[in-house]
Length: 233
Image (tube, rainbow, N blue to C red):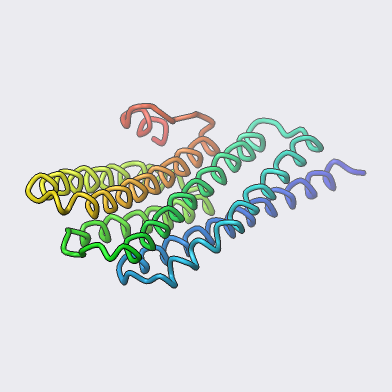
């Protein structure tokens, strides 16, 4: 078998794995939109749809992991191809964890509906943050498809905006709970929702960092923004 034929087979395998990642990402993104709808409209049905998709997301992660392991074992890739496969593993792990957080949101929404908790608390900010997280996840998937490190850098910066929304929302909830102890239980529900949304933003940022790792060959996790900017150039 010629080297060219082997190379074309390897490229086909990488393309297949990349397609599977995008399909998984699309499913997680759909979950998030359903969860935001469930939160906005207090929809028990939409929350159920999110929860029902969790098993499929988990299975997709396992299938992609098997494909990565199989490809590495048979092809013994080097340099950028190996980085690419490793980064895909990180990406699918982050997508699966984002899916877990989205499922938590759906379960929390169902809990709020069942408890009949008052809705006079500042949930509008929560919806804004959820929309921001959804946008960030979509951008991370688009950037992954194109291996666009400049968009990846923007995502890492934009994650700070979600963190700021979370911190501001947390301060507001603390004020509500201090002023009226009756709001403690529903405030805690919203706090858990906010934390899950903040973590979804973190997972989108992690995917962006994996894109930079693929293209530049440097791991920028846990490094200052100035260093990330210098790597991207």
